[in-house]
Length: 422
Image (cartoon, rainbow, N blue to C red; front, side, top):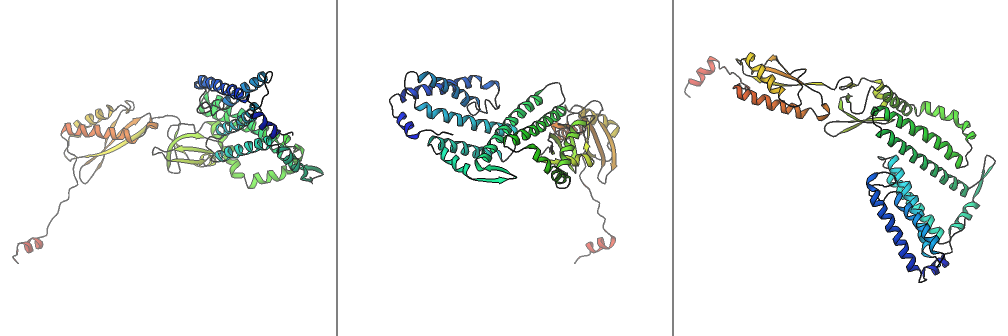
């Protein structure tokens, strides 16, 4: 690989024509920026546009295309110097932005993505500096001199690095393709979300498998050699990775049979919440207080799971209130039922009900039952609304909510002792 003549580059940057090149390059960047600003609203957050337009792949790619065209036109009339530096920089920026955006889309919640982004940036800019200073050919020659034999094959450190880079490029393209297909599948209308999720997971797994095989071939590793390790890998999966494999299989089973769906309210191991995501390894359950539980998929297959919204989203809630002994329950019960029915989220069918559940020490204990069909909006808030409505109904009816009462009896000896003067 030929590097750039650094001395010639410095001489070219000292010509007066470099000001014209700088103006043309600035115009290319402004045009690319304007085009991105106009089209940014069409696909925000995508690989092409990124989050803010200029942090996507399209901006440096468009700027690179305009810079190449400008260079071809300018070199007909004046010697080009600045564009010899700008174009490699734009190419490095395209590579970095592509890798960063693909990793963020493919692994949005991974903590290692930030570290990989910095590593890729340092590698790209380091290679660019070595190429501009004409040190890259010397480094490659030294790497090519480090050789050893593996199984009769002559390998060099340079070939291994180039193979690893080729494999990384292939895997990056596969991740890009799988992320694009997964995004389109999850946005499809008219198909159940769980079905879309299993299709997206299966697509990603298949593409990654194909990409891994192609990457191994690109790295110079013959696929036939992998058959020697097939037995050992099978034993490893059977013993060391059996739990991981079970979780992956269980994840596909859950999505396929639709026993648990995204949005269902479930209770697993005394943890109750809403299923917000089903991955190939674990299921995310979010409680009403904001806490999240990552439940391995195998547990959802092998143990009992309470699904509060599997066949019907309606659930029954109740609250308890005490009224004083002697209250007219025949006249009070319809008023309490009407008060509960007036709460917006309480269903009319099944209708609210009032039951005399216990003769408590301080009063008559009434259990007030009602139904809702939107448990995802919370239970505590609707129970509070019902309690307030019941309290208002009791106040309007003049019914007392008794306080705890205790009867104390004094023995005759104690009373006589109290009357005896000291």
